[in-house]
Length: 137
Length: 97
Image 1: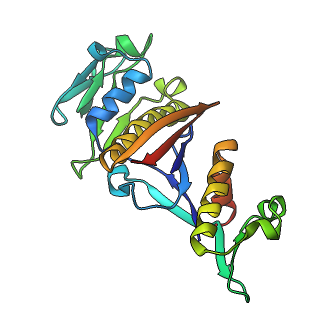
Image 2: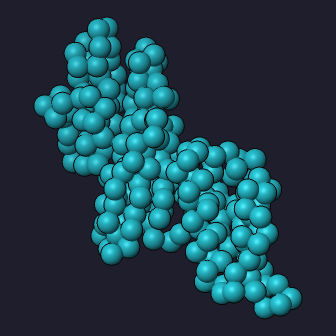
Image 3: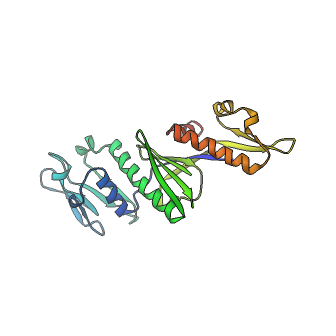
């Protein structure tokens, strides 16, 4: 018997994979600042601090006109990384954009895991869906 | 193994333990998609949860001498549907939970 599984609400737990996914979504590596912990102060559109520090920061000039810094912050568990996107910037960096970011992240993460477990992977793109086809070697 | 990664950042796949879900950190919901039962004459029949699939493959096509053959058929059919219609697995799980 088989069960169909659906996985939702994935968490960003691998910072490097998250950075790679941001690059896949159009940012360049020199636009993405990275720190070990929540050390990078996020600045608002008016040049004032937003009183939030993140482990990843994309300065507002790279986000959009009149935008705030876009950041990623380690949660209190010290492992999960969550996005900090201002209400203004959610017009562009909305749930749809976050979904695509998660899609990029999962695409790389699943292939990495399966390759380490002895699978050969290929990706087929059908419309907006990425299908990982994994074959045990 | 087939894994559909949808643009909303969710995944659908036949349940397996090859992926480390702790590393993915999401919520998993699983619903039975098929069953394999012995027949009175010692063969094995595959019964899909979706009637549409049972109708597409008549009973004779779903009966096998060996259980392993039934298992392979079951996975092949379900995964080929996932390839043809991404998002159906997600819909199926949503409708049955």
